[in-house]
Length: 420
Image 1 (tube, rainbow, N blue to C red):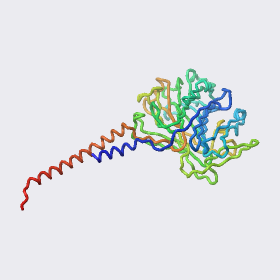
Image 2: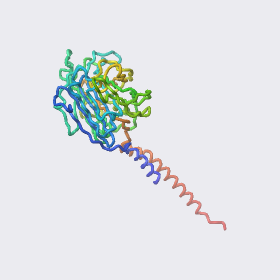
Image 3: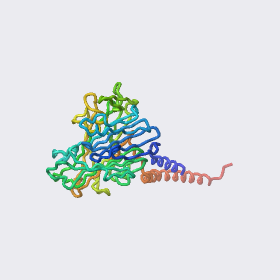
Image 4: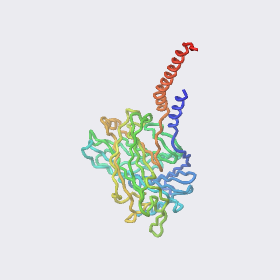
């Protein structure tokens, strides 16, 4: 029984979450420092004992998020609103104090694509930079640390969005935990949950499926990589065993640092500050999701549709101009060699998956956005119990059988009288 107890203890240790990071002081602001509501900027600030994490979400052009990590727990976001709303927003966003930034990057959700059928070409794409976005202040929930960017095309000749919309719902997390509904992504302090909500949008084909194109921008010294991982535990997302992470990793880049950002500006010219250089291969930020989307706001297993990811396309930023938030922080022009990577996330890769959306006209895709290594799913108590029974029962039988054999031998030899 001692062996069984040791086995159970070892298995139970797997359920403990990795890492010892404590809770963070998190706040959510709408258009900080400005009273207008013609544009949407949501600033999530997550303060720790020795650093601060900043998420700047916005719908100026295509919806995007600026990710900035600062080594100062007192760091703050400074927005020059007249410059941000001007045709030349370079230098409108800064993190103070200057020189405290250790990492900066951005993720842009560029287009909603619709494939006629797998491998049969596409309908004209919906360019998200041409959407009209509702006032996020009307749906802001500061206590719940939740905000939403919701919009529809300004011009919709086919009427696909006549009763529909696309929304990006953001929720900030001050502590470790797990989502209450599938896919039950684990979360870490100072991360943000993002939910893509596609509602009421009419498909343009009988067998079509939607894809979301997203692009990541990195300063020199960092690059994106797509990491698929298979898990044994599907308790929180039944039937789904794959998790994908789009991570930003530090790369050797001569004298440049992966932590370059536009920290200070003078007379319209940009001066850049370097942060500490992380060892090559260090994960700086991530987007993580399970390979599933759901056709219901209260999802069950039968509401799921498989979620695929295309190959990662890399290079220098190709679409022009740069998204507004990226231009406001990084600047623009030849002196801003931002690394660019993009991929398409498809919804409905399996047989019958497209029927889920066509019947319900609803799609929900959940993503976790954060800094550092993405969280790894540990085995749940249910799986621990099953493994303990499955591995422990043979061990008990083996130990019990061995004990019975030894006892039987001892009793057989004790029946003989000694010769002398």
